[in-house]
Image (cartoon, rainbow, N blue to C red; front, side, top):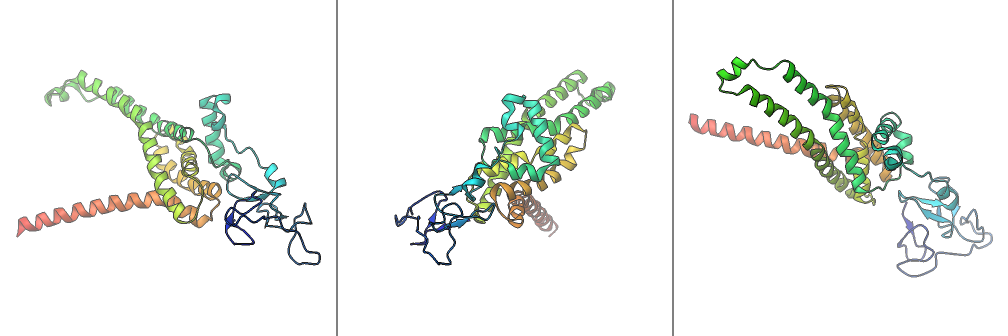
Length: 297
């Protein structure tokens, strides 16, 4: 909610008692018999806004700004929950336990979790969750592939016939597995930064005032379904769709926007990817068709 100065109509921040534009006091005495709403706590003062939680009228002395930018009365502001998930307290619980509990809360209790969640958080914490999610999401499947290659290897005679050293081939396979496992968290971090940037750009165009850290936190925590990667070949197909739905819920609550805007924000990265990939394939197809036509002519 945007609060306006009653004198110059400039925007004011909840909690301010004077206008930053015109300098006039926002504290106005109530006129007996007037129909203007008065503060529920200070009836001698006119209300500047109604609390966005309980609806009570509040004067500038009683208004507070929540982490989500809401204008709240002092009572509702004091009742705000801490807004932390287990991942925010991993120094207390341990990293793996905190990750596990956070994933379960977000996957199976998304609405209450994101409704009470503190929007802001450090970028390092958010990217750490994204990196661990990427690792968990691919580790078991990659391990299955490695086990399959180890127990059902290509016959040595076949490899020698193709001028391939069997032992070197096995070492190469193990090395590639290690490289992929090490690079997967880095790729997850880069992907999360890229998609969060696209999502945040669109959310800002739609009017959100929250900083980039809020979008990054919501995007990272919505990757909780990658925990399903512990089930071989399951997380690859199920987790991205589940994560997309959770990202909509996260943006809706953490940015305080409508469901439509949250969905549009979450669609920014997938649509951009589809456009880039689709455009690339189309350009390649047209180029190949043009070359074939030129050769045929």
